[in-house]
Image (tube, rainbow, N blue to C red):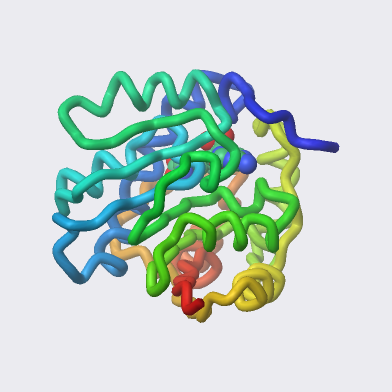
Length: 227
Ligand SMILES: C[S@@+](CC[C@H](N)C(=O)[O-])C[C@H]1O[C@@H](n2cnc3c(N)ncnc32)[C@H](O)[C@@H]1O
């Protein structure tokens, strides 16, 4: 199934879309903790698949940057991001490619977007087109075929996602970025937070599933543009 160029919200249920930011906040915090070891005052940042924009708001509040762009195909979520951004130097745009923004960035981020993209090589080249040489793309990915919970999650997410989802392995993602001229590194997210336990959760039937997911299955790729 081809992906529509824009959608209203990513989650078919707008209330669940609204709740997603709060659920992801501890993960964004960890992404920032392990990837930002420097001052960002002179840096520009891209968030690919920003939804309601919470990641860039958190990043700016902890490490003020020069400017940032968040893009997403979900129109209502981008509109909400624009409303919530306050004084921060961030632009949120409806777009399905980074290159269409017409700017270059020192850093790019995405959190759980790659499994919604059919063309991994296309995504790698799109990020390459907007990242300065030496620039870094941090992509967080728990939705991949090497995750122990993926067979279960694939079905659950397909019920809520308004666009198709894809079965990518970590190798396929690494190959796409290596092939596009990035050096590829990876680490577990290794979340260092207490995460709420929902007994009987469809996503984590056992507490140990949740522990394994956040300490092992969910990874951060670091792609550095070399050429
Ligand atoms: C699982 S949500 C994650 C949202 C956000 N990164 C977060 O951490 O809460 C995936 C997001 O990717 C967006 N998305 C999917 N395909 C996209 C594409 N081709 N270009 C831009 N955004 C896309 C969806 O609309 C959705 O907002």
